[in-house]
Length: 454
Image (tube, rainbow, N blue to C red; front, side, top):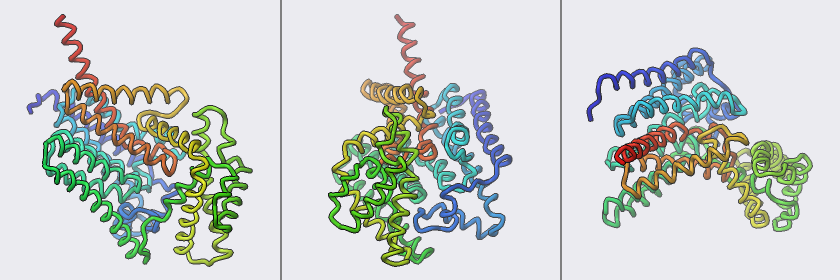
Protein backbone atom coordinates (compact mmCIF):
# COMPACT_ATOMS: atom_id res chain seq x y z
CA UNK A 1 0.00 0.00 0.00
CA UNK A 2 1.48 3.35 -1.06
CA UNK A 3 1.03 6.68 0.69
CA UNK A 4 1.96 10.05 -0.72
CA UNK A 5 4.15 12.44 1.27
CA UNK A 6 1.33 14.94 1.85
CA UNK A 7 -0.87 12.28 3.40
CA UNK A 8 1.96 11.12 5.67
CA UNK A 9 2.59 14.68 6.88
CA UNK A 10 -1.09 15.04 7.72
CA UNK A 11 -0.97 11.81 9.70
CA UNK A 12 2.13 12.96 11.59
CA UNK A 13 0.23 16.08 12.63
CA UNK A 14 -2.60 13.86 13.94
CA UNK A 15 -0.15 11.71 15.90
CA UNK A 16 1.61 14.82 17.23
CA UNK A 17 -1.68 16.23 18.49
CA UNK A 18 -2.31 13.03 20.44
CA UNK A 19 1.19 12.99 21.89
CA UNK A 20 1.13 16.68 22.84
CA UNK A 21 -2.31 16.30 24.44
CA UNK A 22 -1.10 13.64 26.88
CA UNK A 23 2.14 15.53 27.47
CA UNK A 24 0.02 18.54 28.41
CA UNK A 25 -2.05 16.44 30.82
CA UNK A 26 1.10 15.01 32.43
CA UNK A 27 2.54 18.51 32.87
CA UNK A 28 -0.60 20.20 34.20
CA UNK A 29 -2.42 17.47 36.16
CA UNK A 30 -1.21 15.66 39.24
CA UNK A 31 -2.03 12.04 40.01
CA UNK A 32 -5.60 11.55 41.27
CA UNK A 33 -6.75 9.44 44.20
CA UNK A 34 -10.37 8.26 44.12
CA UNK A 35 -12.64 5.90 46.03
CA UNK A 36 -11.09 2.69 44.70
CA UNK A 37 -7.48 3.94 44.61
CA UNK A 38 -6.68 2.80 48.15
CA UNK A 39 -7.49 -0.83 47.42
CA UNK A 40 -5.27 -0.80 44.33
CA UNK A 41 -2.39 0.70 46.30
CA UNK A 42 -2.87 -1.74 49.18
CA UNK A 43 -3.09 -4.70 46.75
CA UNK A 44 -6.45 -5.60 48.26
CA UNK A 45 -7.73 -9.11 47.61
CA UNK A 46 -10.88 -7.75 45.91
CA UNK A 47 -8.89 -5.98 43.18
CA UNK A 48 -7.72 -7.77 40.04
CA UNK A 49 -3.92 -8.23 40.14
CA UNK A 50 -2.46 -6.45 37.09
CA UNK A 51 -2.89 -2.82 38.16
CA UNK A 52 -1.83 -3.35 41.81
CA UNK A 53 1.29 -5.11 40.49
CA UNK A 54 1.84 -2.22 38.08
CA UNK A 55 1.79 0.18 41.04
CA UNK A 56 3.98 -2.15 43.13
CA UNK A 57 6.70 -2.14 40.47
CA UNK A 58 6.87 1.66 40.51
CA UNK A 59 6.71 1.73 44.32
CA UNK A 60 9.61 -0.73 44.52
CA UNK A 61 11.75 1.25 42.07
CA UNK A 62 10.99 4.87 43.03
CA UNK A 63 10.02 4.57 46.69
CA UNK A 64 6.86 5.04 48.70
CA UNK A 65 6.91 8.83 48.79
CA UNK A 66 7.65 9.60 45.14
CA UNK A 67 6.27 6.83 42.94
CA UNK A 68 2.72 8.08 42.30
CA UNK A 69 3.77 11.13 40.22
CA UNK A 70 5.97 8.78 38.16
CA UNK A 71 3.00 6.43 37.71
CA UNK A 72 0.95 9.35 36.41
CA UNK A 73 3.61 10.18 33.82
CA UNK A 74 3.95 6.52 32.82
CA UNK A 75 0.18 6.22 32.37
CA UNK A 76 0.09 9.28 30.12
CA UNK A 77 2.91 7.83 28.02
CA UNK A 78 1.05 4.50 27.73
CA UNK A 79 -2.14 6.32 26.75
CA UNK A 80 -0.33 8.39 24.11
CA UNK A 81 1.51 5.42 22.60
CA UNK A 82 -1.58 3.20 22.45
CA UNK A 83 -3.80 5.97 21.02
CA UNK A 84 -1.28 6.68 18.26
CA UNK A 85 -0.77 2.95 17.63
CA UNK A 86 -4.52 2.37 17.26
CA UNK A 87 -5.10 5.31 14.91
CA UNK A 88 -2.03 4.50 12.84
CA UNK A 89 -2.85 0.80 12.74
CA UNK A 90 -6.36 1.45 11.48
CA UNK A 91 -4.99 3.89 8.88
CA UNK A 92 -2.37 1.46 7.58
CA UNK A 93 -4.83 -1.42 7.41
CA UNK A 94 -7.85 0.41 5.92
CA UNK A 95 -6.28 3.47 4.27
CA UNK A 96 -8.44 5.90 6.22
CA UNK A 97 -9.21 9.21 4.57
CA UNK A 98 -8.16 12.56 6.02
CA UNK A 99 -11.67 13.24 7.27
CA UNK A 100 -11.66 9.98 9.20
CA UNK A 101 -8.16 10.68 10.56
CA UNK A 102 -9.44 14.03 11.82
CA UNK A 103 -12.51 12.42 13.39
CA UNK A 104 -10.30 9.69 14.83
CA UNK A 105 -7.86 12.13 16.40
CA UNK A 106 -10.66 14.06 18.08
CA UNK A 107 -12.41 10.84 19.12
CA UNK A 108 -9.24 9.49 20.78
CA UNK A 109 -9.07 12.67 22.88
CA UNK A 110 -12.75 12.97 23.81
CA UNK A 111 -12.88 10.34 26.61
CA UNK A 112 -10.11 12.26 28.36
CA UNK A 113 -12.07 15.50 27.92
CA UNK A 114 -15.60 14.27 28.65
CA UNK A 115 -14.78 12.32 31.82
CA UNK A 116 -13.29 15.27 33.74
CA UNK A 117 -16.09 17.56 32.56
CA UNK A 118 -19.20 15.38 32.72
CA UNK A 119 -18.61 12.42 35.07
CA UNK A 120 -19.66 12.67 38.72
CA UNK A 121 -16.08 12.21 39.94
CA UNK A 122 -14.53 14.55 37.32
CA UNK A 123 -11.53 12.25 37.20
CA UNK A 124 -8.63 12.76 34.78
CA UNK A 125 -8.36 9.25 33.39
CA UNK A 126 -4.70 9.06 32.44
CA UNK A 127 -3.61 10.50 35.82
CA UNK A 128 -6.04 8.52 37.99
CA UNK A 129 -4.72 5.81 40.30
CA UNK A 130 -7.36 3.46 38.92
CA UNK A 131 -7.24 0.39 36.69
CA UNK A 132 -8.96 2.26 33.86
CA UNK A 133 -5.83 4.40 33.40
CA UNK A 134 -4.06 1.49 31.70
CA UNK A 135 -7.07 -0.68 30.85
CA UNK A 136 -8.40 1.80 28.28
CA UNK A 137 -5.19 2.14 26.21
CA UNK A 138 -4.52 -1.61 26.31
CA UNK A 139 -8.11 -2.18 25.17
CA UNK A 140 -7.40 -0.12 22.05
CA UNK A 141 -4.57 -2.46 21.08
CA UNK A 142 -6.67 -5.52 21.94
CA UNK A 143 -9.58 -4.31 19.81
CA UNK A 144 -7.29 -3.37 16.93
CA UNK A 145 -5.77 -6.87 16.89
CA UNK A 146 -9.23 -8.45 17.22
CA UNK A 147 -10.51 -6.38 14.29
CA UNK A 148 -7.48 -7.32 12.19
CA UNK A 149 -8.00 -10.98 13.05
CA UNK A 150 -11.73 -10.82 12.34
CA UNK A 151 -11.30 -9.10 8.99
CA UNK A 152 -8.18 -10.80 7.64
CA UNK A 153 -7.25 -13.68 9.93
CA UNK A 154 -3.67 -14.28 11.02
CA UNK A 155 -2.07 -16.30 13.79
CA UNK A 156 -0.20 -13.32 15.28
CA UNK A 157 -3.39 -11.29 15.57
CA UNK A 158 -5.24 -14.25 17.07
CA UNK A 159 -2.60 -14.82 19.75
CA UNK A 160 -2.09 -11.14 20.56
CA UNK A 161 -5.81 -10.45 20.97
CA UNK A 162 -6.19 -13.49 23.24
CA UNK A 163 -3.23 -12.50 25.44
CA UNK A 164 -4.32 -8.87 25.63
CA UNK A 165 -7.88 -9.97 26.45
CA UNK A 166 -6.48 -12.07 29.30
CA UNK A 167 -4.40 -9.17 30.65
CA UNK A 168 -7.29 -6.70 30.41
CA UNK A 169 -9.62 -9.11 32.22
CA UNK A 170 -7.05 -9.15 35.04
CA UNK A 171 -7.31 -5.36 35.30
CA UNK A 172 -11.11 -5.18 35.33
CA UNK A 173 -13.19 -8.27 36.00
CA UNK A 174 -16.09 -7.19 33.79
CA UNK A 175 -13.69 -7.11 30.83
CA UNK A 176 -13.81 -10.90 30.70
CA UNK A 177 -16.09 -10.06 27.79
CA UNK A 178 -12.83 -9.57 25.85
CA UNK A 179 -12.13 -13.29 26.10
CA UNK A 180 -15.69 -14.21 25.10
CA UNK A 181 -15.57 -11.78 22.16
CA UNK A 182 -12.24 -13.24 21.06
CA UNK A 183 -13.68 -16.77 21.06
CA UNK A 184 -16.78 -15.64 19.16
CA UNK A 185 -14.75 -13.88 16.47
CA UNK A 186 -12.40 -16.87 16.21
CA UNK A 187 -15.29 -19.33 15.83
CA UNK A 188 -17.04 -17.20 13.19
CA UNK A 189 -13.72 -16.81 11.38
CA UNK A 190 -13.21 -20.59 11.43
CA UNK A 191 -16.62 -21.20 9.86
CA UNK A 192 -16.00 -18.46 7.29
CA UNK A 193 -12.72 -20.11 6.30
CA UNK A 194 -14.55 -23.46 6.14
CA UNK A 195 -12.19 -25.03 8.63
CA UNK A 196 -12.84 -28.51 9.98
CA UNK A 197 -15.27 -28.86 12.88
CA UNK A 198 -12.53 -29.46 15.44
CA UNK A 199 -11.21 -25.90 14.92
CA UNK A 200 -14.22 -24.01 16.38
CA UNK A 201 -14.42 -26.66 19.09
CA UNK A 202 -10.74 -25.97 19.85
CA UNK A 203 -11.54 -22.28 20.23
CA UNK A 204 -14.32 -23.09 22.71
CA UNK A 205 -11.88 -25.22 24.69
CA UNK A 206 -9.36 -22.37 24.50
CA UNK A 207 -11.94 -19.99 25.98
CA UNK A 208 -12.50 -22.40 28.86
CA UNK A 209 -8.73 -22.71 29.41
CA UNK A 210 -8.25 -18.92 29.33
CA UNK A 211 -11.05 -18.42 31.86
CA UNK A 212 -9.54 -21.05 34.17
CA UNK A 213 -6.08 -19.56 33.67
CA UNK A 214 -7.42 -16.14 34.62
CA UNK A 215 -9.01 -17.50 37.79
CA UNK A 216 -5.85 -19.43 38.64
CA UNK A 217 -3.65 -16.35 38.20
CA UNK A 218 -6.00 -14.29 40.38
CA UNK A 219 -6.01 -16.91 43.12
CA UNK A 220 -2.23 -17.36 42.91
CA UNK A 221 -1.73 -13.60 43.18
CA UNK A 222 -3.94 -13.38 46.27
CA UNK A 223 -2.20 -16.38 47.82
CA UNK A 224 1.25 -14.84 47.37
CA UNK A 225 0.32 -11.23 48.23
CA UNK A 226 -2.55 -11.63 50.72
CA UNK A 227 -2.07 -15.22 51.92
CA UNK A 228 -5.61 -15.98 50.72
CA UNK A 229 -6.32 -18.56 48.01
CA UNK A 230 -9.43 -16.77 46.76
CA UNK A 231 -10.47 -14.58 43.85
CA UNK A 232 -12.84 -11.60 44.07
CA UNK A 233 -15.63 -12.22 46.58
CA UNK A 234 -17.99 -9.36 45.74
CA UNK A 235 -19.93 -10.79 42.79
CA UNK A 236 -23.12 -11.74 44.65
CA UNK A 237 -23.23 -8.46 46.56
CA UNK A 238 -23.00 -6.52 43.31
CA UNK A 239 -25.77 -8.64 41.81
CA UNK A 240 -28.14 -8.47 44.78
CA UNK A 241 -27.99 -4.66 44.93
CA UNK A 242 -29.98 -4.06 41.73
CA UNK A 243 -32.31 -6.95 42.57
CA UNK A 244 -33.06 -5.67 46.07
CA UNK A 245 -33.60 -2.18 44.65
CA UNK A 246 -36.38 -3.54 42.40
CA UNK A 247 -38.02 -5.75 45.03
CA UNK A 248 -40.84 -5.30 47.55
CA UNK A 249 -40.60 -6.04 51.26
CA UNK A 250 -42.87 -9.07 51.11
CA UNK A 251 -40.36 -10.78 48.81
CA UNK A 252 -38.53 -11.64 52.03
CA UNK A 253 -41.16 -14.29 52.75
CA UNK A 254 -39.42 -16.49 50.16
CA UNK A 255 -36.17 -16.55 52.15
CA UNK A 256 -36.19 -19.78 54.14
CA UNK A 257 -33.36 -19.09 56.58
CA UNK A 258 -34.70 -17.00 59.48
CA UNK A 259 -31.46 -15.08 60.08
CA UNK A 260 -31.05 -14.19 56.43
CA UNK A 261 -34.71 -13.16 56.23
CA UNK A 262 -34.36 -10.92 59.27
CA UNK A 263 -31.27 -9.25 57.78
CA UNK A 264 -33.10 -8.74 54.48
CA UNK A 265 -35.97 -7.01 56.30
CA UNK A 266 -33.52 -4.82 58.22
CA UNK A 267 -31.72 -3.81 55.01
CA UNK A 268 -34.96 -3.24 53.12
CA UNK A 269 -36.67 -1.21 55.83
CA UNK A 270 -33.71 1.15 56.25
CA UNK A 271 -33.19 1.51 52.50
CA UNK A 272 -36.87 2.05 51.73
CA UNK A 273 -37.22 4.63 54.50
CA UNK A 274 -34.31 6.58 53.01
CA UNK A 275 -35.64 6.46 49.43
CA UNK A 276 -33.23 3.81 48.17
CA UNK A 277 -35.74 1.54 46.38
CA UNK A 278 -37.62 1.70 43.09
CA UNK A 279 -40.73 3.17 44.74
CA UNK A 280 -39.03 6.53 45.25
CA UNK A 281 -38.01 7.15 41.64
CA UNK A 282 -39.83 9.82 39.65
CA UNK A 283 -42.00 8.74 36.73
CA UNK A 284 -40.43 8.20 33.33
CA UNK A 285 -37.85 5.60 32.35
CA UNK A 286 -34.95 8.09 32.28
CA UNK A 287 -35.78 9.25 35.82
CA UNK A 288 -36.07 5.66 37.02
CA UNK A 289 -32.66 4.74 35.60
CA UNK A 290 -31.11 7.94 36.95
CA UNK A 291 -32.47 7.15 40.42
CA UNK A 292 -31.05 3.62 40.31
CA UNK A 293 -27.63 4.85 39.17
CA UNK A 294 -27.56 7.48 41.92
CA UNK A 295 -28.53 5.05 44.68
CA UNK A 296 -26.63 1.90 43.65
CA UNK A 297 -23.35 2.45 45.49
CA UNK A 298 -25.01 3.88 48.60
CA UNK A 299 -27.45 0.97 48.75
CA UNK A 300 -24.63 -1.54 48.29
CA UNK A 301 -22.11 -0.14 50.76
CA UNK A 302 -24.14 1.77 53.36
CA UNK A 303 -27.09 -0.60 53.65
CA UNK A 304 -26.34 -4.12 52.37
CA UNK A 305 -22.64 -4.39 53.23
CA UNK A 306 -22.87 -2.42 56.48
CA UNK A 307 -25.87 -4.36 57.82
CA UNK A 308 -24.37 -7.77 57.02
CA UNK A 309 -21.00 -6.68 58.41
CA UNK A 310 -22.54 -5.43 61.67
CA UNK A 311 -24.44 -8.69 62.13
CA UNK A 312 -21.36 -10.83 61.44
CA UNK A 313 -19.09 -8.98 63.85
CA UNK A 314 -21.76 -8.93 66.57
CA UNK A 315 -22.89 -12.54 66.29
CA UNK A 316 -20.35 -14.67 64.39
CA UNK A 317 -16.75 -13.49 64.63
CA UNK A 318 -14.17 -10.99 63.45
CA UNK A 319 -12.28 -12.87 60.72
CA UNK A 320 -12.25 -10.69 57.58
CA UNK A 321 -11.98 -13.54 55.08
CA UNK A 322 -14.73 -15.59 56.69
CA UNK A 323 -16.91 -12.49 56.83
CA UNK A 324 -16.54 -12.05 53.08
CA UNK A 325 -17.50 -15.67 52.48
CA UNK A 326 -20.48 -15.33 54.81
CA UNK A 327 -21.53 -12.11 53.09
CA UNK A 328 -21.32 -13.65 49.61
CA UNK A 329 -23.36 -16.68 50.64
CA UNK A 330 -26.01 -14.50 52.26
CA UNK A 331 -26.22 -12.24 49.20
CA UNK A 332 -26.53 -15.28 46.95
CA UNK A 333 -29.35 -16.66 49.11
CA UNK A 334 -31.24 -13.34 49.10
CA UNK A 335 -30.80 -12.82 45.35
CA UNK A 336 -32.02 -16.30 44.42
CA UNK A 337 -35.03 -16.02 46.72
CA UNK A 338 -36.32 -12.56 45.79
CA UNK A 339 -35.35 -12.35 42.11
CA UNK A 340 -38.45 -14.21 40.80
CA UNK A 341 -40.75 -11.76 42.60
CA UNK A 342 -39.30 -8.68 40.93
CA UNK A 343 -37.88 -10.04 37.69
CA UNK A 344 -40.06 -7.82 35.49
CA UNK A 345 -39.09 -4.62 37.29
CA UNK A 346 -35.45 -5.71 37.38
CA UNK A 347 -35.49 -6.54 33.65
CA UNK A 348 -36.96 -3.16 32.67
CA UNK A 349 -34.28 -1.39 34.66
CA UNK A 350 -31.58 -3.70 33.35
CA UNK A 351 -32.59 -2.88 29.77
CA UNK A 352 -32.66 0.81 30.69
CA UNK A 353 -29.21 0.61 32.29
CA UNK A 354 -27.88 -1.22 29.23
CA UNK A 355 -29.30 1.39 26.83
CA UNK A 356 -27.85 4.10 29.04
CA UNK A 357 -24.53 2.26 28.82
CA UNK A 358 -24.71 2.06 25.03
CA UNK A 359 -25.52 5.78 24.81
CA UNK A 360 -22.80 6.67 27.31
CA UNK A 361 -20.36 4.72 25.10
CA UNK A 362 -20.85 7.23 22.28
CA UNK A 363 -22.22 10.43 23.90
CA UNK A 364 -22.89 12.28 27.12
CA UNK A 365 -26.19 11.06 28.62
CA UNK A 366 -28.82 13.82 28.86
CA UNK A 367 -32.58 13.78 28.16
CA UNK A 368 -31.82 15.35 24.77
CA UNK A 369 -29.06 12.94 23.69
CA UNK A 370 -30.34 9.49 24.68
CA UNK A 371 -32.71 8.88 21.76
CA UNK A 372 -30.55 10.46 19.00
CA UNK A 373 -27.42 8.66 20.22
CA UNK A 374 -29.20 5.31 20.43
CA UNK A 375 -30.65 5.81 16.94
CA UNK A 376 -27.15 6.58 15.67
CA UNK A 377 -25.88 3.29 17.09
CA UNK A 378 -28.79 1.40 15.48
CA UNK A 379 -28.09 3.14 12.15
CA UNK A 380 -24.43 2.13 12.34
CA UNK A 381 -25.48 -1.46 12.96
CA UNK A 382 -27.88 -1.35 10.01
CA UNK A 383 -25.19 0.14 7.76
CA UNK A 384 -22.64 -2.52 8.66
CA UNK A 385 -25.14 -5.34 8.03
CA UNK A 386 -26.24 -3.73 4.75
CA UNK A 387 -22.64 -3.52 3.53
CA UNK A 388 -21.95 -7.13 4.49
CA UNK A 389 -25.09 -8.33 2.69
CA UNK A 390 -24.21 -6.26 -0.41
CA UNK A 391 -20.52 -7.27 -0.10
CA UNK A 392 -19.37 -3.66 -0.13
CA UNK A 393 -16.48 -2.42 2.01
CA UNK A 394 -16.65 -5.74 3.84
CA UNK A 395 -13.57 -5.22 6.00
CA UNK A 396 -14.70 -1.82 7.25
CA UNK A 397 -18.20 -3.21 7.86
CA UNK A 398 -16.73 -6.06 9.89
CA UNK A 399 -14.55 -3.63 11.84
CA UNK A 400 -17.64 -1.61 12.76
CA UNK A 401 -19.63 -4.74 13.61
CA UNK A 402 -16.90 -6.06 15.93
CA UNK A 403 -16.70 -2.65 17.62
CA UNK A 404 -20.49 -2.59 18.10
CA UNK A 405 -20.36 -6.11 19.53
CA UNK A 406 -17.79 -5.00 22.11
CA UNK A 407 -19.73 -1.81 22.85
CA UNK A 408 -22.98 -3.68 23.49
CA UNK A 409 -21.28 -6.48 25.45
CA UNK A 410 -19.57 -3.98 27.73
CA UNK A 411 -22.81 -2.09 28.41
CA UNK A 412 -24.96 -5.20 28.94
CA UNK A 413 -22.33 -7.00 31.02
CA UNK A 414 -21.71 -4.03 33.29
CA UNK A 415 -25.43 -3.34 33.76
CA UNK A 416 -25.89 -6.87 35.14
CA UNK A 417 -24.08 -6.07 38.37
CA UNK A 418 -23.45 -2.32 38.65
CA UNK A 419 -24.30 0.93 36.88
CA UNK A 420 -22.76 2.04 33.58
CA UNK A 421 -20.49 4.85 34.74
CA UNK A 422 -18.64 6.95 32.15
CA UNK A 423 -15.26 5.45 33.05
CA UNK A 424 -16.66 1.96 32.40
CA UNK A 425 -18.30 2.86 29.09
CA UNK A 426 -15.67 4.91 27.23
CA UNK A 427 -13.75 1.95 25.82
CA UNK A 428 -15.44 1.89 22.43
CA UNK A 429 -16.01 5.63 22.01
CA UNK A 430 -13.08 6.34 19.68
CA UNK A 431 -13.14 2.97 17.83
CA UNK A 432 -16.86 3.45 17.13
CA UNK A 433 -16.50 6.90 15.60
CA UNK A 434 -13.46 5.87 13.57
CA UNK A 435 -15.11 2.75 12.13
CA UNK A 436 -18.52 4.38 11.63
CA UNK A 437 -17.18 7.52 9.95
CA UNK A 438 -14.88 5.46 7.72
CA UNK A 439 -17.71 3.22 6.50
CA UNK A 440 -20.17 6.09 6.22
CA UNK A 441 -17.81 8.15 4.04
CA UNK A 442 -17.05 5.21 1.74
CA UNK A 443 -20.77 4.56 1.29
CA UNK A 444 -21.39 8.25 0.64
CA UNK A 445 -18.67 8.28 -2.04
CA UNK A 446 -20.26 5.22 -3.67
CA UNK A 447 -23.66 6.94 -3.66
CA UNK A 448 -22.22 10.13 -5.17
CA UNK A 449 -20.47 8.16 -7.93
CA UNK A 450 -23.72 6.40 -8.81
CA UNK A 451 -25.58 9.68 -8.81
CA UNK A 452 -23.05 11.25 -11.20
CA UNK A 453 -23.31 8.27 -13.53
CA UNK A 454 -27.07 8.74 -13.95
